[in-house]
Image 1 (cartoon, rainbow over the protein chains, first blue to last red):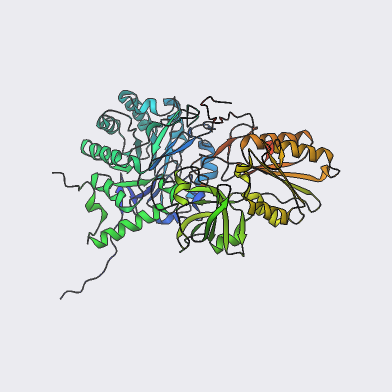
Image 2: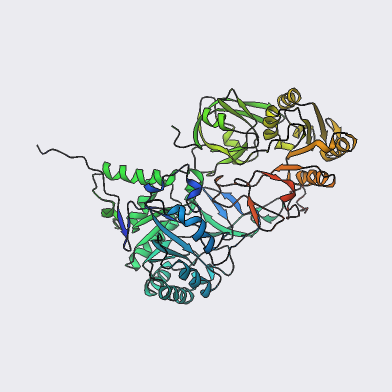
Length: 311
Length: 278
């Protein structure tokens, strides 16, 4: 009888040339700049960190109320509050660089020139593995969604960014469109190295006694497990339309949730709202994927990417 | 099994009706309990269900024998309704202690605690830990909204004097808590030693901070906002500050110097007839 050697399943993946020790990342805007989780999560155990969106200048964000809980999810209209790219570089990035984890910087702007300026600022900075371009924030009128819901506008923006940076570029797509594959192809055609999807779904809640929206911004982005089936479907559609890798996200709480995205075609996943509920969620998901692979006698997580059996 | 300094699994050691619609919950969490300071809060998951998904913030009202924390709450929605069904012996996940807590007054100061409605728990904890006995004001709309009797008893044991007001006069003195506070301050020879700490509805804290500012009395407020993470990352609990921009209640607060807060920030109060008031 041959001796069975128990080996640890291989969780590593290559995301557009970025080696991730496991496929679990943090979704932008749900993990700050990493340091906020210093007492809770060992960043060395994560595939990567996608930091909260940074813009050229600091942004103070929307007036409160900014969040409202909904069934199995939440609405938010934070308004992309952030300290700006210079403060990110001086105060936030040095902390992240201490860890053996891939740092993806989420960037956004109010105009094409803004986006390009942020990308240029980050070019050649050690410790940055790639850029995630937010073309899909539903909460800021000018920034993001204007690009993300217009195929031509997103193509021109991503093409301009392609010229501005050599860093791997990931377009974060909006689900608030009729056909996600058009946007996925436009990003691939513009030279993006990968896709991130989905951002939040545009939503609204009303206080029936005051007859006023629950959020000061009226509408907000819906996140959490409530949106997961929509996200899995969009990742599956996008994966069939393009050949660049996908970071799948939308309501992932557990390893099983993450595996749905991977089977749908995602190379990596990002954990978002779950970080608010269980600050340890990212590590739990990574550990859970490892346990699942061991249980199923699967040697590497790469064997599962896009392997949903479609009848 | 605690994984870190802030994540805890706690056993429910007491959970009962506390009167006037309040419930009292005691959670055994020794590490948390020994670290907790007055004014700090916890984010408590009311069940393992994902609906509601978010943890809820609760101010700590007492630490019991350095082993357990005490919380008070009222059933106001889906989360607290679920919480009310949790039985003794059950385990709940929570994070804490979170936030900055009340700054300690100088040794010779006269601490004045002003609690409105459901805002009393952190002040109860503060009263118990203060070196010099505070003067306490408890206000509510009516006697049904007042602090439960056990909490009043607890206040009396730690306070130099407890003043009770209700808007409609159904308990204590009729009128706003700020009227009683104003009368006290203006009749007190100790006013220049007073430091005010308040927790309650935003409108009340705005009024208290004005009474304080008009008399040059330092005052601190414990702010409440809807909160998702409690860790300073969701940016959901921000309050507007006079200097421009926002501060996070969970990180820079919940306790702020009252002069820092932009009290003019628009607030909507629900009223029964459906007409909104600003």
